[in-house]
Image 1 (spheres, one colour):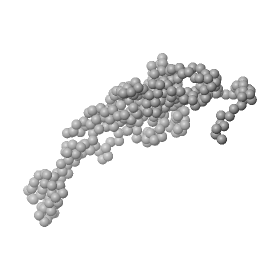
Image 2 (image 1 turned 30 degrees about the vertical axis):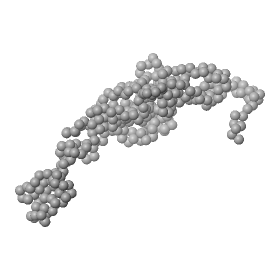
Image 3 (image 1 turned 90 degrees about the vertical axis):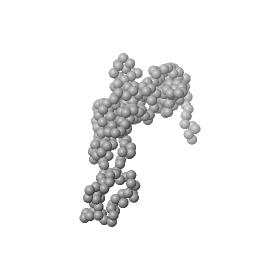
Image 4 (image 1 turned 60 degrees about the vertical axis):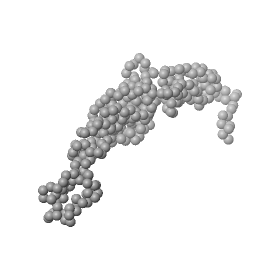
Length: 323
């Protein structure tokens, strides 16, 4: 994926408000519902969501700027501290530590093999491997073959809300540099993990680890997710609020018409049953549309004159209950 700053067309020093504004403008322009004849709009829209997921989030933006994560939000592989533990030492990726006692002679431990007795008392006879060596020394090796080695890999993948509903196949790059095509099933939830057996790290003498993919859902320019329900602010005109009428409401399955009754106030909530997110074992959630009365841009002398005349003839106070 391209640099998220480049995708949103903002400089690296851009403010959070500038990033949010750029994202909303581009998301509205490239939304698949507004570009049904453009096969590339869905990919462009997903790229915008992924970029906003990184630099639209303060914490992730700092991580990206510090080079800790890449443009897809995946951790950059920094290597193992002190080298790869699987390449240091013996089988299983662990070092074999050998201790020798020098017997009772010069340079050794007197008193009847004191160091040998200490090890035997601490670890038991099974912990000391080997026996007496010529010269009175004894070799002890710690058996680490029974210790577990964590070979699982954890990566994050961001999908759009539409992709989480319909399912999608995406390529993921692992910290090892390997790339895989991963199928995300339909109706996946934010935070859900997908396990791919045997696609993790490898080490001699151990089974390959698994790949654990945590799915994140990018913020949507229109919808707000609440469990299996969706919410949307629905702009309506002043005359639609007064006179009523039918307006188009976007849904994940395509736009639908909603009847607005006469004298609808701003903030009224309409429920569109079954137009929310699908559930694996139940009916889909609902879409809640909240009306927002929008006045035309700029000054309108005719509208102002009409409102002044109406105000003088029909005064009312909607804030009377506020005291």
